[in-house]
Length: 141
Image 1 (cartoon, rainbow, N blue to C red):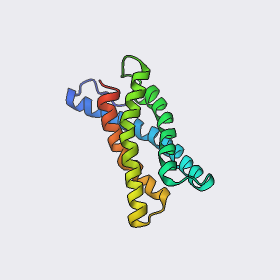
Image 2: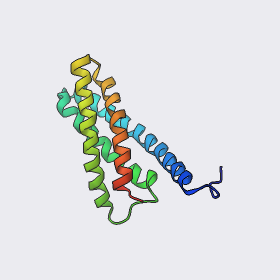
Image 3: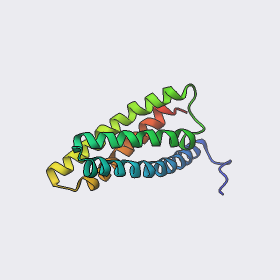
Image 4: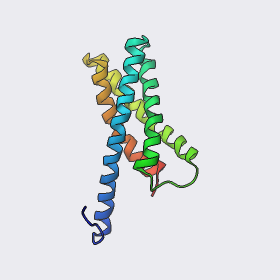
């Protein structure tokens, strides 16, 4: 393992952010599996419209990813009540939900992309928002 003890502060902050982003991506991959499985189950199996199935699947993945991010990605940050962070996470990720669903709806309606592929694109765009704002707000340094 590389020693970072002698690194200047800006380089150390960037390194730490990169490490945290890698964890966030791993957690996000798990959340994406929850999201995709939920979306498939709700839309294809239970016949829910995409307008309802997508947000419900995203909400399920938000619950799973909050827990993993709280106890792994940002385990060393965040003070105060976990309920406060959960509410902040929900608010931030609701913005991500809107981004994800907006991209999905656009790609399905305008480009006739399969809804599961469109969901992957939407999730990738939303992930950038979710990481940036959660890092700055939910789990502040």
